[in-house]
Amino acid sequence: MSFESLGLRPELLSAIATLGYTSPTPIQSGAIPLIFDGGDLLAGAQTGTGKTAAFALPIVQRLGEKIPPQKRRAPRALVLVPTRELAAQVSEEMNNYARRLSLRSTMIYGGVTIQAQIERLQRGVDIVVATPGRLLDHAERGTINLSRIEVLVLDEADRMLDLGFIDDIKQVATYLPAKRQTLLFSATYSKEIKKLADQLLDNPRRIEVERRNIAADAVTQAVYEVERSRKREMISFLIRQGGWNQVLVFARTRYGADKLTEELLFDNIKAAAIHSNKSQSIRTRTLAEFKRGEFRVLVATDVAARGLDIQHLPHVINYNLPQVPEDYVHRIGRTGRAGEEGIAISLVCPEEKPLLAAIEKLLTYSIPRKNLDEFPQLAPKRSMQVKEFKKAALPPKSRKPQLRGAKAPATAAAPRRGKPVAERPLPKTGRRGSRSK
Image 1: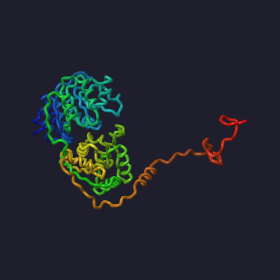
Image 2 (image 1 turned 90 degrees about the vertical axis):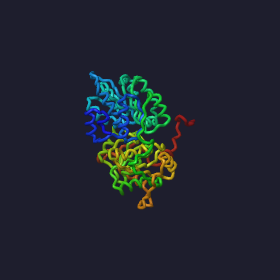
Image 3 (image 1 turned 45 degrees about the horizontal axis):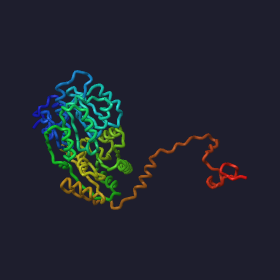
Image 4 (image 1 turned 30 degrees about the vertical axis):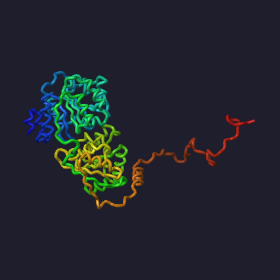
């Protein structure tokens, strides 16, 4: 099947060719005709399968057939996503198609000033890509008009449920017209997803192009068993030994991501961290620098497990195994995308073996174990060295210049010579609290 056979307009075919796409992926060839038919859709697809184009192309084509004449357009398509990173990714791809047909698209998410978003909405847009919380904020303020939405897309719906957005999604739905087309994309079909689909979708068509929760065949997986205290040392060893220049490392916590980044910098490996405690501007800049190759290692928490679109990413390392087995699949799905090969390595300490067993049960196979015979057997004591490294990196304390011959000003807290203040008894006077006769 070709993109031409899907009935796409020449402007969109030109955009597809510019992006280097030659033939549709299974999710694209299956979903695009169904979306053109106008009915609701429940689609199962893993990340990296081209699902964004699967809903973006038909939506843009349908909206482009009738562009409102008024300058201030109300949104006609709404795409809900779980994270800010995914919002940026989807919005970028949507813009690649929308501008070919003179459509306007914008993204809405938290962590940035709301006023700039309000101004863009006031200028008029056709397509909005948003995270549920910030969109609901706009709806309650009355700064967005959702009464003309023709198509609602729930992208990575399972992840939105994992992050606790179920109530926000239901609340957003109350602002939408009852007559609309709803498209739900999910990597898994849990009971919660089916329940959500029953509430929001009307007699949907259902397609599933890949088995649920199965890692991509293009990803070579391996497990290295190592003590928890030596994980950082093994990461540095793997990166140096393999000459790796672009590595995405997943840590479980924000503190762990920052700590690992400091230790890698101490090992002379350029690294940076990205997690929910960083501002959106810093996260966007850090990701752009990583894509440009300005540093070798990006350390991330699961906030980046989905939504980070890094082309040609060759290596993913699980510094900590995730608590939820499905998150393992999403993590390693950052590599081996669009038919390219990738390597996913997990460093597993004895305490994490139950988590590994749960992941392998989900995958229905065992991940190969590997050993590094050349890995040093004795681990040097690094903790004190890292602390000294951080201390040395701090700027020296500022000192106020003094005039020659001038005496240093006495401070109120400085005691006189002799016994310390706490040891000198108070004089026996008639002050309050003493007994004078």
